[in-house]
Length: 119
Length: 110
Image (cartoon, rainbow over all chains, first blue to last red; front, side):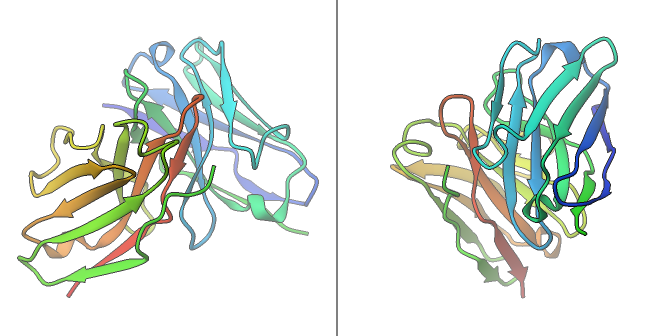
């Protein structure tokens, strides 16, 4: 069965950096695009970034463009999100999600990891 | 990349039907038949309920159905059950490999 396990969350000061990881299992990781989606405390879901199956193309929400970098290591079945210049408004639970084969929806989600940006 | 518009809350009694709307624009919902719906219970990860507008993944009850008209998509839950009480989010492909979510709707089963 598909499993996605995020890690790397924690407390970081404004302006700081953090790298999130998402370990994937139960499917052929190298064949699927992957997403990061976040949810601020008590708020709704916000799409953050998407990477194609081979890492050839990466796409970002305007709110994180230039500060966050999505990447993947298909040899390790792991997705990453490098977050730089963090702001208070980046405080959220960050979920990784597996794209469908057609790329049209987010089929499976991890349990999320909490990032808190605070001094 | 403005969020899709959903009602903040809806409610219904067990056995009744409810519909949650999701209004976007001609750049997202109106341009693509790629709306998906997610159910989220408190403290849990979202779960896919409907994809490509009206398709149900394996294992999702046929009490859940989706539709679209113009720039508005809808999720209907029939035969409401207590376990359906959750937050529901719509999501649409918005072109150029970007996605946009709705603000979420809290469903209360009375």
